[in-house]
Image 1 (tube, rainbow, N blue to C red):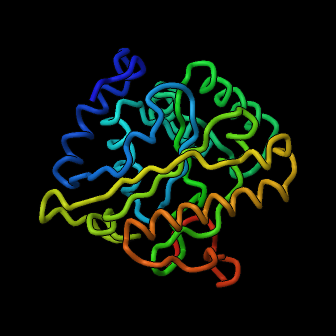
Image 2: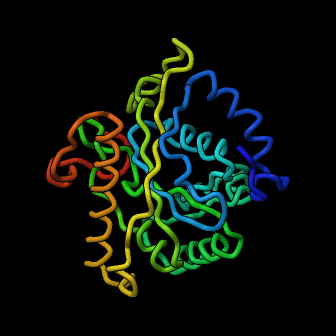
Image 3: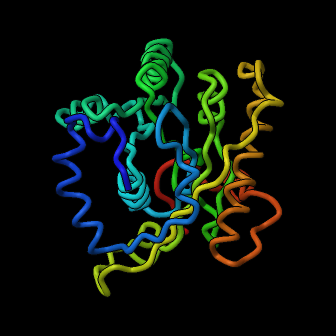
Amino acid sequence: MRATSEKSRPSWFWPLGAVVVPFMSLLAKIRFVHPEKLPREGAYVMVANHYSEIDPLIVAVGVWRLGRAPRFMAKESLFRVPVLGSALRATGMVPVARRSTSASAKETLKASNDIVEHGRGVIVYPEGTLTRDPDLWPMRGKTGAVRLALEAGLPLIPAVQWGAQEILPRYGKLRLFPWRKPVTLAFGDPIDLSAYAGREHSQSALTEATTLVMNRLAEMLGEVRGEQPPAERWNPAQHDQKETGRYDA
């Protein structure tokens, strides 16, 4: 497919891609569903399901092949790690704080403004961690992606992928063989957030909109899996589970 100007400019993505793309091509054979629904230019927020530690690499390679540079929201603490922090900044990743402070909020706001100014896209895992759902359905989400889309006036693009669990099970070990396991990466139409416009500072509105987003991801994943998703999203708090870090599945 034709590359966009975003990909054609020299960047840190090229040396990273030279290593990551061939390696992931050995592990996964990505099948795209509705790739035309990923914007080819302009800024956007993309939300995706998250159930394996290798998810970001699958999504990053898929987005890269479709002509966009894959930029993620990443934990703010990672930006303080020597070398890694420099690499994250050089590739335009967006810091997000799990604990709200004025300094981190300003940094995230600046990075978000840069996304709009430079017409970039950003990928967000609204669950904030690997899903706790025992059947790997999307669980309850956090409001950051919706807030970013509403504040910046950006389209919110849903995406789901399925098959990565055969390469790296949740908190499991990497399975190298057989090579090129099939993985599906599907994109959907922008989620309509017009009912929440101007309410980006209302926690109830953000929570309601996030539920809408997670339900849409579950619906799309059900279509990919050929299964009916649960009627409600998994809530870790109702199952005495932590919402961050590893846990016993």
